Amino acid sequence: MKQIYKKSRILTDAFTHYCAGCGHGIIHGLICEVIEELGIQKKTIAIAPVGCAVLAYDYWRLDTTEAAHGRPTAVATGIKRMRPDLIVFTYQGDGDLAAIGTAETVHTANRGENITVIFVNNGVYGMTGGQMAPTTLLGQKTTTSIKGRKAGIEGYPLKISEMLAVLDGVCYIERTSVYSPKHVLKTKKAIKKAFQNQIDKKGFSMVEIISPCPTYWGLSPVEALKRIEKEIIPIWPLGVLKDV
Ligand code: SF4
Image (tube, rainbow, N blue to C red; front, side):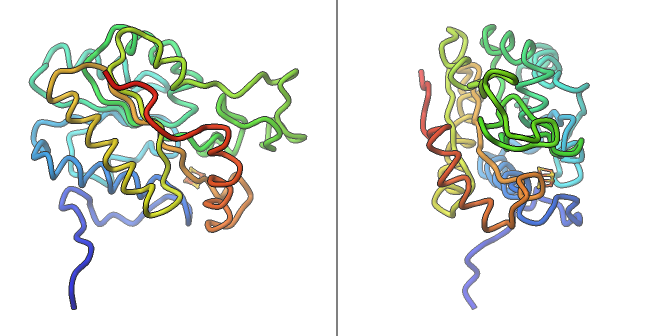
């Protein structure tokens, strides 16, 4: 039988701790494929976040370090400045990157650090029980916005990619998703470009990936994918926000 998919050898066989229908596993796989195709496994250092992906190092054969909550881009800055020959990337959720780590994210981007950032946006705090995140949509119910997020009380969803795209230090920002095979392939292409930019010393590159969290959206895995297409993409349009 013809083999149509070959798993990256960088991806481990660890039993997943992610919920059924979660997007993290797909995105881990894409990162591993890209790193293998670029031939940079031995010189890549990953920075894992605090959040559902805190155990990311279990799933890939890459040198990986943890950062305190929200601080991956600061840690990445230190590593990259000491060892500019290495390829350094952070893997962060919306709580890590766009809430507690907002300052680090903004200033790392503004300095134009030559790193790659993978930003997984599912609009909710998964690890801690489904609380509202900065990227939670208006009207979305979470355990801390039980009647739905209201602009007058909790403020508006934070457009972190749009915010960063106006900074002079930023080279590349694209928003993608993994709700269909076509978009999984587009996401892989964007991740590859974000790593290639670093190899070419172009500066700060980030891919924001709209990802399903069926558990805290209160939906089945299939319903979660439909929600991305019908409810989330109209609010967070996909595409390139900056490409210098
Ligand atoms: S809580 Fe959500 S983001 Fe976390 S592992 Fe489960 S589905 Fe994924």
